[in-house]
Image 1 (cartoon, helix red, strand yellow):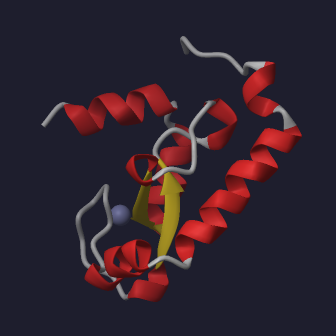
Image 2 (image 1 turned 30 degrees about the vertical axis):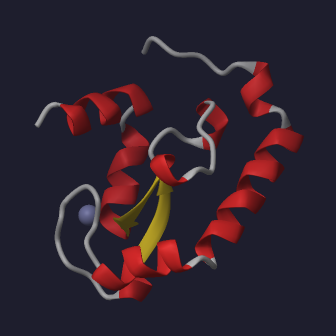
Image 3 (image 1 turned 180 degrees about the vertical axis):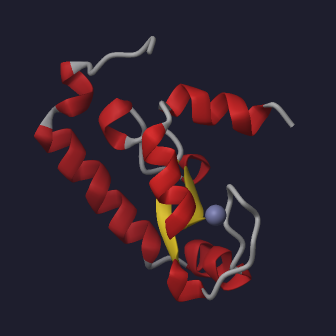
Length: 97
Ligand SMILES: [Zn+2]
């Protein structure tokens, strides 16, 4: 693992702010269209909109932000799997194809 928890990323105020931004993004038509399509960003299988969760590619606690290019729909299974990977690994896998 070549990343560490930077105190400036784990500041509870920052995390609360990014979570709030994520909640706001969930209300946007941008997000609604994404989950209506029903495709998980990781396994690319089709799911009902209600089965997809909002996933931060780089988690907030690792410096990720609640911005459109860091947020993707993920099924529960992939969300679980991703927790076991480091974000760096997840990004490398995404960019390798
Ligand atoms: Zn999936």
